[in-house]
Picture 1 (cartoon, rainbow, N blue to C red):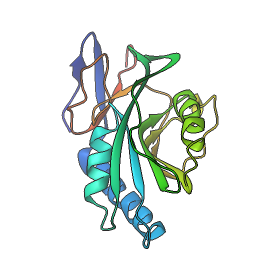
Picture 2 (cartoon, helix red, strand yellow):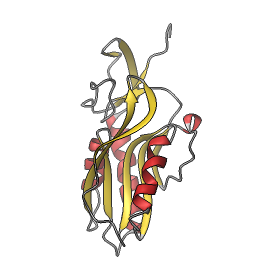
Picture 3 (tube, rainbow, N blue to C red):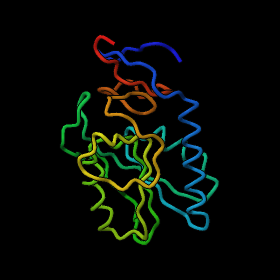
Length: 182
């Protein structure tokens, strides 16, 4: 792994390598494939952050599956604003479908808990959540996560789809904010 990187005015240190991320995603894909062996799940990827996770997970699935995208947002800078904005809505009928939400990160849980009732109102057959990163220490709104790649401390991270004010999403690994004086 390389040393520190700078994104805007902040410095980040290596945290999860590309190989570690890919191995965990393969494991989650195997679990999902076993659980949905005789089904055709619909994945709903939440943009922008989940695009890399969703693409990699999807290519490791040997089962028949579909994917669509929705855009929700609640971050500004390194903090959640507490307000969830739907920028692109769901345009696929999920009634009677096995649905798996793909999310890059769940920290406070507010975004996903505000989105879930909208999906449940459409009466899917089942509704599961797969997440790349979960910050249990930051969770204020409890969420039942069915597939989780990594539980991480409550530190700000960038890379592998996650950004800091628009930058850093293209990094192939995940970096965490460097502590002052560390």
